[in-house]
Structures are given as C-alpha cells and as structure tokens.
Image (cartoon, rainbow, N blue to C red; front, side, top):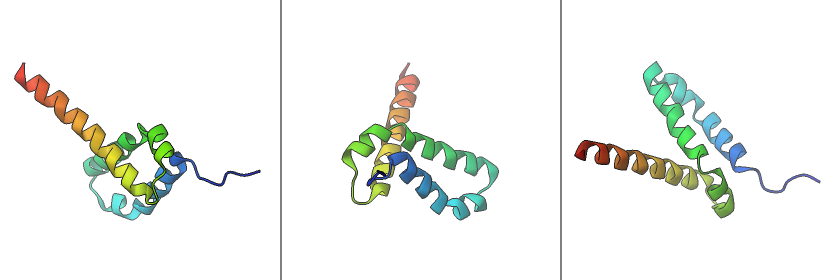
Length: 81
C-alpha cells in the first residue's frame, strides 16, 4: 500500500525543482545563497510534516524565516560582545 501523503522532503524537492529556472538565472554566489535558504527549510521537516498545511510553501517560508531569525539573533548577540 502506498503513501497517501507525500513526505515533506518530497514537497521541498518539488518546490526546489519548480524554482530551477530561477536558480539557473542567478549568479554563482546567489545560487549558493539560494541553496542555503532551502537547506534551512530542511531543518524543520518533522514540524512541517506534522502541520501539513494546505499550501506547503507557507511552511517552507516559515521554516526559512525561523532559521534567518536564529542567525540574526546570533549576529546581534555577537556584535554586543
């Protein structure tokens, strides 16, 4: 019996694939940044699968924003030292 719900990993892979032309149009350093952004989304696979929103890209964006916020807090804390 097959799965009725795709894994969130598959959903992220599909989203990355849908942006492939955009990525190809970026400069190399921007492609690296693009890849890092989607790596951030992969850090929250379990949470995203648990919530499984009707529009999975919303979960991808929130995951990316969480990781960006954590990075911002680290940078802010380091600059205060």
